[in-house]
Length: 130
Picture 1 (cartoon, rainbow, N blue to C red):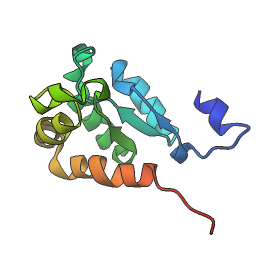
Picture 2 (spheres, helix red, strand yellow; picture 1 turned 120 degrees about the vertical axis):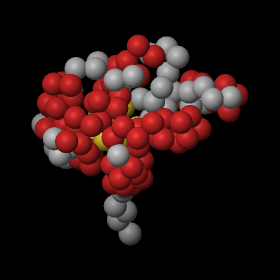
Picture 3 (cartoon, rainbow, N blue to C red; picture 1 turned 60 degrees about the vertical axis):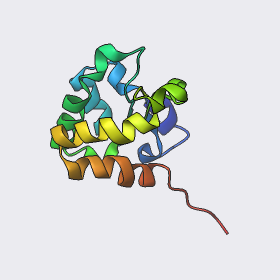
Picture 4 (spheres, rainbow, N blue to C red; picture 1 turned 135 degrees about the horizontal axis):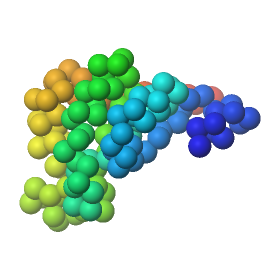
């Protein structure tokens, strides 16, 4: 897919976000994807995909250790971002409270702060012609 976007249309790889990487918890695939220069979006916890959620800290740590921490993005299970998330289930509140604390303890507070603030700022930045 990245070849289709970055080949003929010449989309710069740092303007591409590859999503749902943790649904395939192969760390070698993650490293390959990171070497392209694209941003790597990992989903937050999900009731539907809880089998791979516990692997998230290891995946993030491996990417950060390999120098790709600046390409990591985190999302959340937006299908449960309503009432259940307020009670501690998946969703944005869970990502920013429970998941953030867990990742900071396992990956480090500085990389997690960059993943949650600096990386999205760069990934979604736009230059406007005035």
